[in-house]
Image (cartoon, rainbow, N blue to C red; front, side, top):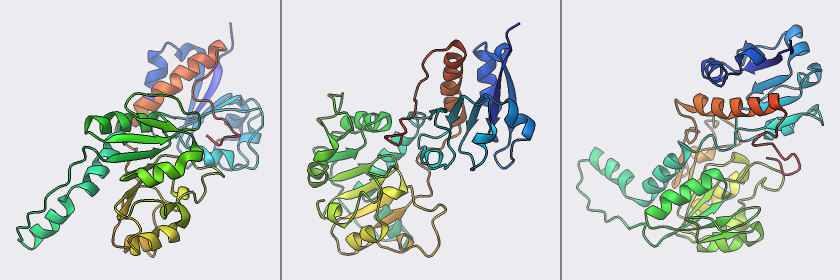
Length: 319
């Protein structure tokens, strides 16, 4: 009888993953251990684990798993994994890229509509029982610039194009794509900054993107432009953004991700007029475990069959 592969699901909600493993007909080929996120695997679990699924892991764990051959990160961003000082060089690492496709684009479009339309002003006027007839500017004909035209960016482009927005953006390997008027290489980022009425950040956190949006790049944007960050907090140099918004170099910013979360109470983002803070609500939704489970189980079947896995992390690129 062929030995079964030992899998460790290191997460709090395991039902969707166990159900997906069973539905895919893989239950007889694996032995599954489950472990809450705040607990540490036992020596026995680490000794037998061959496949690991987790959000991230602390230093010292992976080298203690001698049989580990593949780790599935439960998030699209893997900077925490790559930063591990003891990440095994031969460990196959995959991420959950694309699993926010069903929720994040909706939230991004909602954010865009919020900053473009006078809804917030109407709510404030209602508190004072004031009837102020603010005329909303149409989105049709405006330009949405997307830095990071990946799965999420392309879905945002599809919805935005239906609203009449012209979409341009950057991609590491630019190629023609539906609903995007111009997909440009990263070296042409200044063009995207200068032409965008709304600038959406969807870049990963890498050494190259650290403090990517700084005073110099903010200075390339239109004074009427809004910045939307649903990518990573490290993309923005915080002090430069606060200064740019205060000086009216740009119209404002809506931020869903931050260097430190929760955002400290003393951070100036909270009190700077023109900066809107969202508590990292862009991606999470009630069905996300089901979607991640679908990707994990497809990869698990591929792993057991010796076939290439999906969403393999390029460690050199950082994602």
